[in-house]
Image 1 (cartoon, helix red, strand yellow):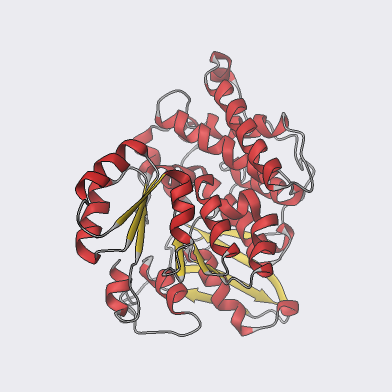
Image 2: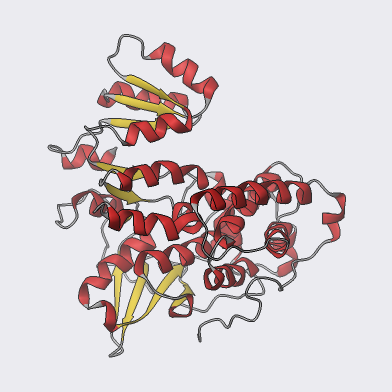
Amino acid sequence: MDVIRHLGEPYQAVALSAHRHRERLLEQVRQVRPAAVAVTDDQTADAVEAAIVGSGTRLYRGAAGLVDLVRRDDVDIVLSAVVGAAGLPAALATVSSGKTLALANKESLVVAGSLLIPEARKHGATLLPVDSEHSAVFQALCCGKPAEVSRVILTASGGPFRDAPLDKIQNATVEDALNHPTWRMGSKISIDSATMFNKGLELIEACWLFDVPPDRVQVVIHPESIVHSMVEFVDGSVIAQLSPPDMKTPIQYALTYPDRAPGCGRRMDWSKLFSLNFRPPDFERFPALKLAYNVAATGGTAGAVLNAANEVAVAAFLAGKIRFGEICGTVQRTIDAHQVQRHPTLDDLLAADHWARQQATMMTESSALIHAQPVARGVGADYHLPVQ
């Protein structure tokens, strides 16, 4: 909203969506008077409907309503920041309508990259990354041709546990896990950052967005979160995109692409002394990252299962049902129990998502999980990580 106000005409928020954040949505409705809103939670939709009577703003209900919202004729660009697999139907509807999709919902590509990318090409839709890491890669790629790319380097802050001993990580509290050192995000993404599943999802997303195999995507820990990601070219040159950690910058670039406009995000202060540090990730401390590499190499329905099981496991941790250290183990065992379909249809992916949620739910509710440990087996267990 700040970016749209900063850019001014011809940018206008003509449609908004929310799940349960009723008050924030209504505040935005009062500010910008959108033509339409979509609310996916039924109880929240009832309250919003009562509040907007006579305002001229149309209400769309449920997941189907969100799809109808993005298909409206007055919508040109869809910025999707829906958390989880719930963002997939609207993302598919956007590209099938030939519109520009500014994507901050990485799960759409993790679950259904094999469908979303071809669908965008088929309908001539533009797909632009909004995650700061993928926006950085997208911008760096402008410095060379696809055939000249040696590897993509994704930076990660390391989250709240980048230097923590393993026993502290295994038994971390919800408060500990939500205390991200750089970004202020919702609870799901904050937990994913603490486990580094978030970076794992971004790894899979990068493979789809930039058409590179996982062995050409490298993750490095960068605590300062100033270098958002890098691209190394075949001649050894490395192009990086730097800026203070502020999501306004990548959001604005997606909205104005291929042009640039004066920004409203924070700027680098080159008058002060600072340093930038990089180090390889510890896969023993963050087994979720190794698991994501395995899933990226496997493909098929594996991404849908990983994402669904992780959503269930994170919810169980936040509800106090499992320990923090059991999140990755739950996902690993769900994948181990899954028979991967290599060339899935949308129905296959949705079925895999549904199955994985049921499987992971049974695991999180089982008392036997208390003593379970993550096991590095199953999908792609012999996959070799890129050389650090």
